Length: 302
Length: 302
Image (cartoon, rainbow over all chains, first blue to last red; front, side, top):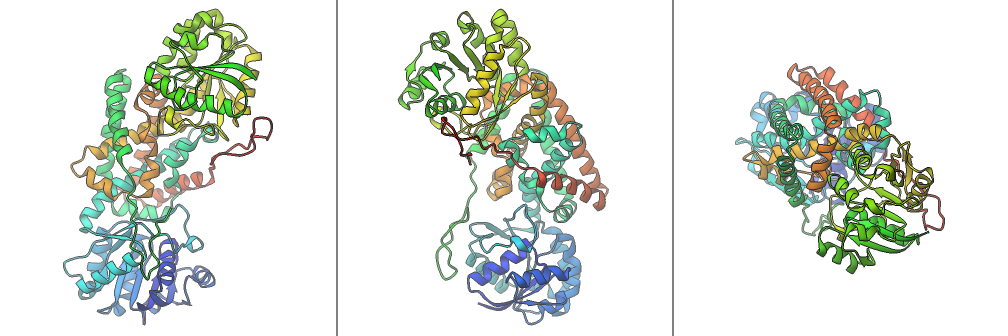
């Protein structure tokens, strides 16, 4: 049980974390800060936060758990704003989709206060952004990746593990490097491809007409293309080396399939499709069923 | 009201059409044929067809409506097998995802019997194939594209329009050429990309580990990669010119985004994402609510 959650960044991810902690009875009050005063006010009106703070530092003041839920590129300036109150024993976490850049920023700015920071990436989200979509169930049944460093306080890593588990997450640990390599492959490249695909459609004279004919396959394939531009600009930039490597691998398999098409090689093409189809048919989203307990767990989301 | 539906190819698409016609009270009996005897038998046991035919020609014999629901590359041989019974006044349709190749095959084989054939492409489907997944609701609320030719009997085009409307479809008409161009963009390229993406993942040493970390974004983006290999081999081959053109346009916008990433040009990258995100956010799957009537319509699927 925490006394006070300091929420920095009142958006979908941070707001949902606050609501989940409240719902699980894990926090007495939530103090929130956002760059935009109207957003903080909205968060207060919606009951996501109890008190509006006028700065990130004031949201940290008096908190025993702090979550930084801002676009990854804003993480470093957030660390700068709060570093004087990054005290031992207080659990600091982020929710960023990239971890190497976040960890680098933490090293640069937090220095001897680094042990208090437990980098976290919950694998959850939605194509709608904003505090008004915050949902206490967002993390239920999802994975969260923690990427603690050698210096990270093990007591805080355990606390972080417990709090994510209590709101329904399966907690995994990885190095920041392995995290970024894996998510370039399974998440960042698909986003890049979906954005580029929509742009290609749009730039054609008949693009609008084409779109009106699109069906359920298109709907699902492009769902992630509606994601938040600033968030994804930051992710694509901060993990660009890994993403570009994944894109190269993807272009090679795309080339191979197009070669089969050009060569009219039905046998090779069918093998290429079969291999993809088998692999995808065997895959299932591992939803985690948390043990029931005081957190009210036991249900999986969706 | 039809007396007898001849179903050639007992799979998801054809089986669902048969069930939909039965459910709407539009047909007295269904005679089905499939290359595989065990499939025909299964279709009979499941009540999708009433009578098993030993050849495509026997499925046509005595039918006043015939649906050819085979992978597109098998359309021409099917036309050859049945052409002696392609009689005026009998409505012949297919359900293929490409139309130029089907129409070319029809011209070559059916010749003076061409007017009886109304090419059709219902925009519906599923990643699971096979008669056991046939569903009377599959076409409910979906679009169907008819691509009649100058020679096509207008009376049969009207009959085709009526029968698809009666099972809940919105009926659109296009030329085979425009159809293939549009569907290369909104359906065929996404499939090619999804197949290639999964293959790229698989070919990496850590691919399996990556897949275990994938979340809901991956799930939706790759859903279509589980599609039926033979069906998609035929589509990718038969519409390859248009698909390769679309792939080129896609590679150009992907190049442009990667250039922004390499140049560390956050402003350009954000614009590129914003444009995709706005476009996708505005798009909605137009589901069609058919008027209620004797077909029992009035509900939209999903």
